[in-house]
Image (cartoon, rainbow, N blue to C red):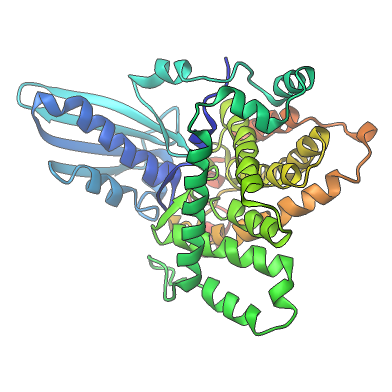
Length: 401
């Protein structure tokens, strides 16, 4: 078993959730394409688990209705029936001659698992190695950087793909820094990125302050996501503000655009390792699988762009992930707003600090590997009480009810 393309980590689409909006929307397209020739009369969709518990706040029903708007339809939230995966959808397709029933699972990052693509997902594996230990060993043996490794196995348009992803991130930042008003939903959360930016520009310290700049750019994208705007998963919608914050830091350090694009590819490599060997779904493994992986990816990107050794890149990513372990996913009322927006800013800054820490820790004092942290993250997620896995039944979601 190997790894699929890193393109899967960076997908451009509507927020506020890769698992709750992007995945379900892609699922509707899959269902329609599969059954349209059979004469679809009606489509009923039942949402289970986290999709049922927080779907309204994540706009899941709205995005599904958008996907099947040309047909008579109904979307139902089933909060009681338990399924193996918490992001399970059932589509009942009524056609001219027969009724079909099909389950689709949204596994995070906009990726869906269907009855048809369980095997094709395996066939789409393009990297021969599964974990970071195997990748590191191969790179050292063949004198390759992580970027060289990605280029060796991805298709020829990979650079073009990431240039578009970077442009989409920059566009999201620009829109976020201009937008005002309230985010959708009953929480009445104000958009703050513009006000924060304006306040920073009025202080001589703020213009050059790293933490302020990083936080504001993270806020801008996280708020765009919460508003249902176009963003890039990294690796999910809820964590999409982390990488743009890290990119702002790199630009403040005068890192070239070409090097940033290469760094994004390296970040994607660490992200796909986590998605393959653990999870990037908050519903499955808590926010450690979303924001923790995003922080890890950001740290790897920064270390690579600064020309650090392979050991330092891996250690930066490991520190970022290790110290995100146990992080709960408890969005208030199911909206990707509290604590999600601030969390993106905080963990972008944390990614920077993880790199600073990694480069001063002696090599002979490294006891935990990146793969160790990935395995631990997943096991922790499986052990975590379901209240803290995107169900909005515990944590902050419970306190602020």
